[in-house]
Image (cartoon, rainbow, N blue to C red; front, side):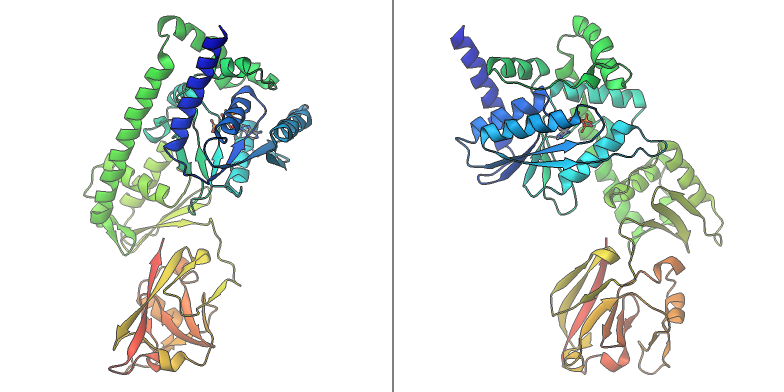
Length: 450
Ligand SMILES: Nc1ncnc2c1ncn2[C@@H]1O[C@H](COP(=O)(O)OP(=O)(O)OP(=O)(O)O)[C@@H](O)[C@H]1O
């Protein structure tokens, strides 16, 4: 009996070790997302045990959402538990405010992930398991989700473009029964979240009312549904590959060309637009909204300039191309950058990067800019510029109009200044006064918007 219990724990540890080692490397810092429930308590115990053989730094993060009247007890429990393991814990105290049209749970989840994204660790480790995965897939099916929504939770994923920390889920192939039995075998204590019993919540309704019946006929349903979600993941990958091919055909200077997207079937055009929104980290609109957007953009007359808004995003049509504008990082008027000779400069506020290349007989003359501070900022109005030496100096506004830069982009393009003088405008050129002499090596800036 004792032997079989020990064996079960050993098998459990072996499975988690395998799942971990598929992603982490020795020395990584793992922060366990500890709610105090059985899943994350077992996860913490497992990782603390494995950390004796795998060199890693372990800590924990707990979010006190301030929703349940027991929230403070849960935080204290997590604190004591980590103390008993000698592990540091970060507790975030939140005051969740519900916004109209959003559930409290969805808001709490969003805030939780926001805290996770700020944790100083290589991975934030979550305790979702095989049964959670099956429930999530069924819930998504019942919401009418598309292929992406049916992919299920990935074992590892980036939380932000910088890539650190990542979310890691090493229990995804382990069942709830196995986790609870590991907890009992190792005499662990955990807290029970009373809200998990309330069938007002869709997930609990499925868990308590539907899945036990399903299990009588399909005892292995969580593993079967895991297979299904893997099929969806593969399909989703193929759709992204198709969109990447269509992007090559439809994109000119970073904008989808109306004449090209029109050549695609409507379903393929929708896939392309969805892909472009996802690439910019924009929360996707509903399918109905996406179809409306595409219809309006494609059916507008050549001179009209439709603008469709959803969330913080605007989709516009301007001179034959589609412009996607997202106000994730609003351009602050004071945003300016100093160039100290770097080969590239990431300009977060402008959503892109400028690369600087040394090139013979082209570009900006090093000699002519050597005595002044080189800064990059947006237009303030009144700037004048002379990209062609034998033509008169013109207002920047006129030059941007002539270059068909749409009005909403004119204030958000990065400009290079030498002291107070404007020397470079992307897509237009270098001011005559600062261009290289023949045979001199110059610096050629190239703007790469995201
Ligand atoms: N209050 C909390 N503090 C820290 N971690 C938490 C907290 N609540 C949940 N977690 C972590 O998130 C995991 C998933 O929790 P839960 O299933 O309640 O969230 P969810 O809203 O269903 O999330 P998802 O939609 O990502 O599945 C838990 O196993 C745990 O690791």
